[in-house]
Amino acid sequence: MWLMVMFDLPTITKEGKREYSRFRKYLISEGFIQLQYSVYAKFLASRENSRKYHRYIQAVVPPGGYVRLLMITDKQFGDMVSLYGKRIEEVERKPEQLLLF
Image (tube, rainbow, N blue to C red):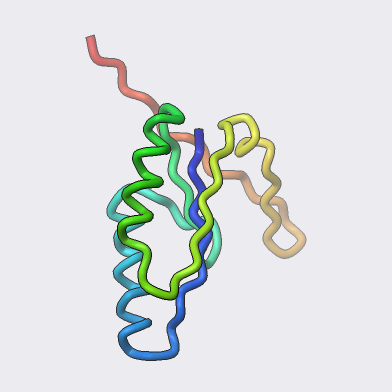
């Protein structure tokens, strides 16, 4: 599963900018990758793990923030087309899984 986080946070005041920065840094520290401005994604092994992140993110959303969370399968994420100008870019790949014996 991929968990996508899409957000709009107020950045008019200094405090709003600080809250935006904290939220963005939190996502990066949790391993989310930036797909576009204010759109981040993370590959998760299961739907249960995704629900855990729902709770974590809900706890750190700044006041006045508007956040959407979307779960999609790896196949759906892989079918995404990424256009950069006239070029088609390769879509991010899920991280390699480590096998522990």
